[in-house]
Length: 195
Ligand code: ITT
Image (cartoon, rainbow, N blue to C red; front, side, top):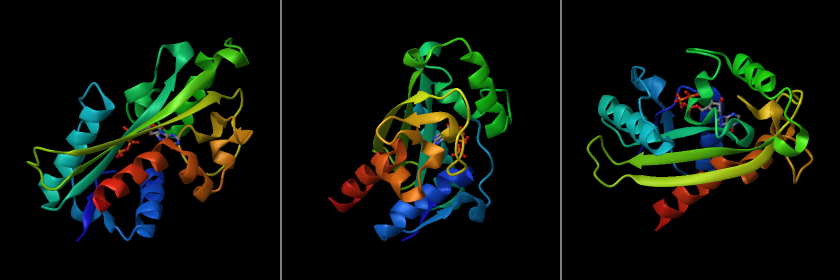
């Protein structure tokens, strides 16, 4: 059966399709079902993911999976967090968000630039599903001083992956999925589907 992927972020869609295709879980982006934009009014990743999955299930009549994710920077007390996609303002580009973050951290030394990506995935069997499946993943790293690499999306060029000694935009897609917040959450979704 088809599952609708409640995301308009091409970077996310690529990563999620790659992992779930290997598990023979078939997903189609919500753009194919004419699902309109929804305002992310939640105060947590979980709330926003449920809101997006419910909206996509409602408009498509199909089961839906949503990803709400973001970057928490310790020196900014967890910002941009759930506001990561609009850090530089409504409709901001990835490049503008990334630039604002580098500017905000100008005077923060290397040892204090710790950060993590968070990902929450929510699966709903239908729009009124009272028992959503919720899976999470976290990826620890540090914010670089300059962008590096051109793979991935969003904040990847400034996210140092300490175990690899490079930015997450310098990882190939399979390696990123093996390590990332999203990869971890996706493997938990697969386990729950399988059980
Ligand atoms: P959808 O809601 O349509 O899925 P979005 O981009 O608005 O797309 P979010 O509200 O969840 O999604 O925002 C997540 C932001 O966090 C995203 O725009 C990136 O800037 C950042 N982000 C999340 N995962 C990332 C990753 O793996 N690499 C780099 N940046 C990431």
